[in-house]
Length: 154
Image (cartoon, rainbow, N blue to C red; front, side, top):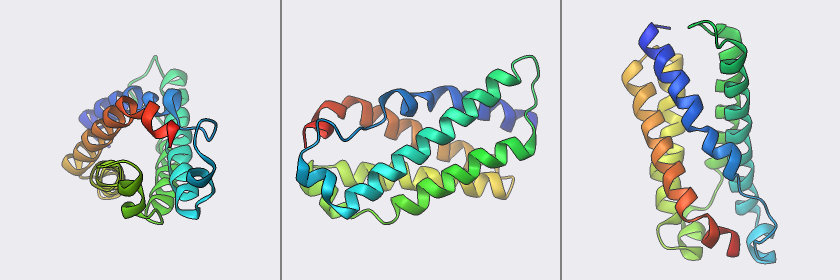
């Protein structure tokens, strides 16, 4: 991994801390919203993304005196992102859009696409895909945090 990828990775860990602090919880969601199997996949995808961010942030703190993070440690972050992507692809985008206009579109175009590019960038040492994936995830995080009250009321 190049130094610029390490730099952007550290930035991504800080920004995605947002997922950890605003992760969706089922309290506040209607019974129908939380009981739907597609919504459970949505919640699982967010939880895995939160776990990934939590692990990445702990690695960044552990290695705060160094510009390097062990490749195998970072692989754990990527594996959690893969779990998030797996769950995300099982979500019914139309159902999300039905509950809140644009919800599914943002989820598909920013969260899912961001995870795909992030993972591809990591696996193929493609800095542009890695960074583009992170930008999309950041965009999703902003949209999600702005709409969290509405999402929790569904």
